[in-house]
Amino acid sequence: MTAESDKIATDKRPGAEPVISVEDVTREAERIAERGPSKEDIAKLAGRDPFVKIEDLQAGYGKMEILHKFNLQVARRQSLCLIGPNGAGKSTVLHSIYGFTNIFDGNIEIGDGDDKRDVTKLTSSQKLKDAGIAYILQDKSVFPGMTVEENLWMGGYLMDKPEQAKETAEKIFEKYPRLAARRTHPAGVLSGGERRLLEISRALVMEPEVLLVDEPSIGLEPRFIDMVFEILDDLQNTEGKTIIMVEQNAKKGLEFADIGYVLVSGEIAIAGTGDELLANPEVGRLFLGG
Image 1 (tube, rainbow, N blue to C red):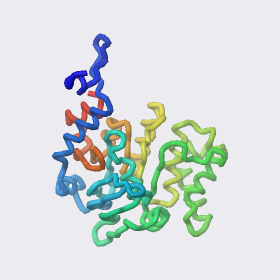
Image 2 (image 1 turned 120 degrees about the vertical axis):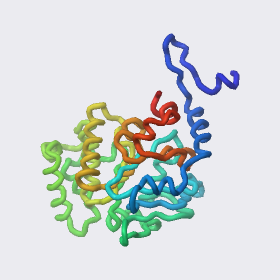
Image 3 (image 1 turned 180 degrees about the vertical axis):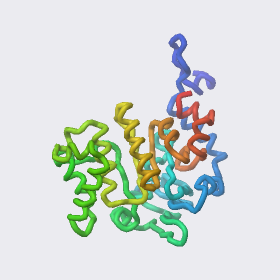
């Protein structure tokens, strides 16, 4: 195969658009990463005093470093979407914020104004209970044999008294009648969209301020994808949550988010507003299918 033909794997069917391979996406994105954003660029996107700040983070699993001098800033009530090729380190960012990785260097702060706190070394339980950070896992994290109500109660497992979780669950049922109608049903019989709603709602029981959302649209039908993003929009803009998400549907994620980062090999290749990334021809070619 020639060097030129190796750049893009082309579908030979009449009228078909060129299809770029995963390897080529990574190569092209690495080229873009050589002129990645500065710390000042990242700070400017937060627009004001950041509520979540990561500075020069080096993190990974075991002895393997995945994130290299990684920086991030998101203000209170803002949303950030991380996109990029497989293996770029997107989920590792969420894992590091929540305490699932080894931190080799750098720091993570939560809070704004005079109320900033270094949470780098806190455990995931401490981050949920004391720092107000909740992690919404990918699909299939509900307990299928438990009822919807019992799943919600499990979201408050760190509360001092079980009654607190039950009180908060009732507020969630008031907010989401769709769940309330199924409160006594086993979670295993819920539709994909209802299951995702339950996963999000369970994370809300501890009343967090920061939501880490991993692939909210994965495995869902289009009508449920819209529903999930409407819920996230309400949590951000009505309830004031700060949202950091990884989303494989790059177009949907960037349409939702205030800020977008394109990650490559544990570093930020491109950063901008969601609209700027949607309009960026390189982002479009590599990640948006056009």
